[in-house]
Image (cartoon, rainbow, N blue to C red; front, side, top):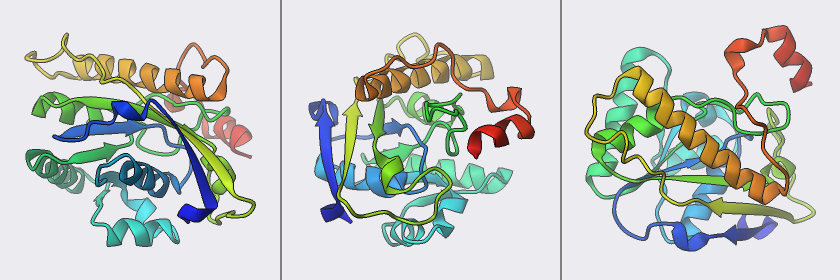
Amino acid sequence: MNLAIRFRFHHPERMPQSGAFVLAPNHYSEIDPVVMGIVSWKLGRAPRFLAKASLFKVPVAGWLLRKSGQIPVDRAGSKSHAALRAAEELVEKGRMVVVYPEGSLTRDPGLWPMRGKTGAVRIALERDIPIIPAAHWGTQALMPRYGKKLSLFPRKTIDVAIGEPLDLSAYRGKPLDQATLIKATSELMEAIAGLLAELRGEPAPAERWNPSAHSQKETGRFEG
């Protein structure tokens, strides 16, 4: 697949070359984990993913995720807890872990990041490690949102931006209650949206898409 993709990196020097950290990218295609896995390798780090369990059932992407030792997240309580502990074990070994803070493919009609979940920020704060926002654009030409088939030809170009570490100094050492985690996650999503705006050359929406504020009927209208 690597030969079918041309990557253009923006700020690749921001990718830490040693130590544990969380990489938090945007998510709008089922093939995103494979793409970000290649990106991580190209930028000098071996990727490990905390990805929703359903991705492991996607052709090509699922096989690659299983073979490379990634971590499936089942939304059932005990299994989700086990996945977080597995991610923390990677952190203890000084490895990077890729966590999609949106939790699933964005439902924003324009493919902008939607409101995030708190898992990525929680790992970073609990383990006192950096969280690096990231964004990519162009993956939708390789596999569209909710698509299952790859389009490898003609060759696709994917732009990738690596952000500065999110400043979590205001939250470190404080109780990690839900309000704190939500606020920190909101800042993370703003940083990811800003990187994506840079890649797309257009401003991001003023607010992140909130799936809970839209009915299934409204969401279906945008998802085709």
